[in-house]
Length: 88
Image (cartoon, rainbow, N blue to C red; front, top):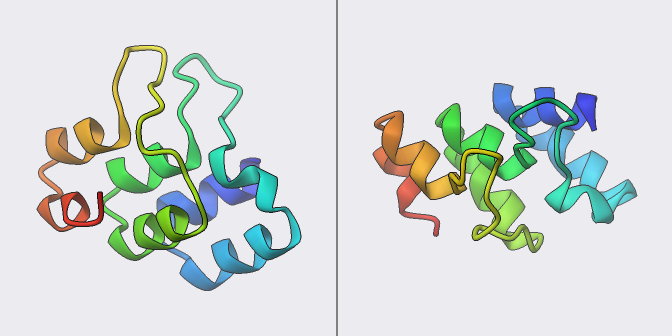
């Protein structure tokens, strides 16, 4: 999940697509840190709109919350990433 998390946060769309093709169950994968964010949350918080779109197309659940009860949309909005909000 670490590699996928880093790819999502960095906006490496092709790498994310390749990883999900091999491991589709990771589409709702969570980091094992205190915040327990999904890969969708990481992409949204970083403003990676194309990665967000890909994750949603692959079935990511946009309604999941992290430890602080934040969804991916909330994290995108808090970061001022308006372009990410269009993919919900």
